[in-house]
Length: 500
Image 1 (tube, helix red, strand yellow):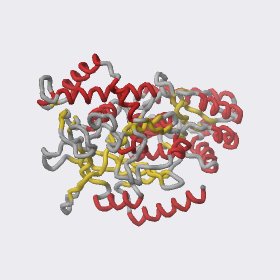
Image 2 (cartoon, rainbow, N blue to C red):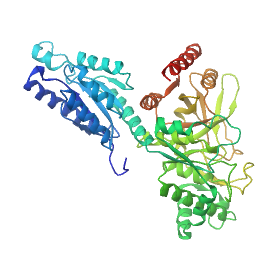
Image 3 (cartoon, one colour):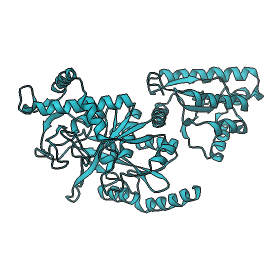
Image 4 (cartoon, one colour):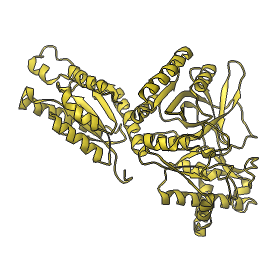
C-alpha cells in the first residue's frame, strides 16, 4: 500500500429483500450511523468506510472483489442487521483475501420491553442473523475475529482497535522487503534460519541478501555535510558520554557511527526495505559493528534482527506498524542471562548492542566501549533500561513444513540493582505464568533465543495477526498449564500434518 494512503476498513452490512423497502432503509440508516461512530471515535487506527447494504450474492461478490483490489482497504467488518441467508455469502467470502472481523452487535442496546412488536423483531435480528453468518464462516474454515457486544461499548472499540492494527500488520506483511546485509545467519545456529520461500508464500515477505561491499560503498558515499547535523541530533537526544561530545577524544568514532547510520538508512530507503539484518561474522569493510545505527533505525520504524535473523527482523517491523500511535515500544531482544534466587527469578534481556530505545524508561546515554565479538573498533551504543509494566515476547519459528508464532506475556520489572559495568541496553522481566512454567513452555514450543519484545501490543492482537496469516499460534500467559500445552502441541502437529 502506498504510504500516503490512509488505511481503512469497510463495514459490510447484511440483510435481504424479504422485509420490504422500509426495513432496508432503516438498516442502511443504522449501519451508516455505526460506521460514522466507529470512524469518529478516535479509537481505531484506520478509517471506517460504510458500504451499501448487501442483499444478494452478486452484490456481495462484487464488494469483496472491490475490497481485494483497493490498496488502502486492509480489512472488512461484517454485521448482519437482519437475517441474511448465508448461502449468498459463499462466493464473496471464498474470494475475499482481506482480514475479516465479524461484529456481532445490535443497533439498539436495550430491549424495549413495553413497546416491542413484530416490526421491531423483524428489523433487529442480529441475534440469529449473525449466527447464520457465523455458520458459513465455520463451514468455510475462515480465519476471522469475532467481536461481541454493543457497538458503543468501549470494550468492543478496544477489540476492533486490536483487530484493525493486526490487519494493518497483515497489509504491511504482504509488501515487506527484508535486506540481509551479508546474506548469512550466524554459523551453525539452527533457530534463526528457515524457509524464505515459504515465508514469501505465507506472509508475502521478500527476504534477500546484499553484499557488505555494496553497503560499505553506500556508507562511504554519504554526503559529509550530513554528518554534523546528525551529531548535533545525538547531542540533543541523548546523554552523551564526555569522550563522545564535541571536543572529546572519541568524537571521531561517533562520527563514523553517524556515517554508518546515514548510509544504512539511505540503502534501506532507496530499496524500499522495511526491515534488515546484520551479523558480527560479516563486517567486511566496516569500522565498527553498527550498534547505534541499528538502534536508531529501529526507533524510526525499521525491523531488525541480529546474526541474520530475518524472521525476528520482519516481526519487529510488523509489530511496529501494528503499534503505531501507541505509547511504549517494540524492540529486537534476546533472553541473555538469569537471576535464579528462589522466589525472585528474573530474566535479563539484552543483546550485544542492538536494543531499540523506544522501550527506554529514561533518556538513554550514548557511550562507547570495547566489544569482544566481531574484531572491529569499539562501537558506539545507547545504554538504558526498559520501563516496567506489561510486555510480550514474540518469536516466529520454522517447524519444518509450517511456521509457528509463540507469544509469552511478561511482567517487566525494574532491575533490582544498578548494573554500572554492563554497557548495553536491557530489560528485566518475569515470564508468565511464572518463571519456571514460562521458561518450560517456551522451550517446549521451540521458542527462539531472539524475540520481538513489545510493551504496546497484546497477545490477543498478535493472535489475530496469526489467524490472518494462517499460522499456528501458541499463547503462554497466566492461564498456561504445561499438561494442556503438551497436548496442544501434539494435536497441532497432527492437525497440520493432516491439512498438509
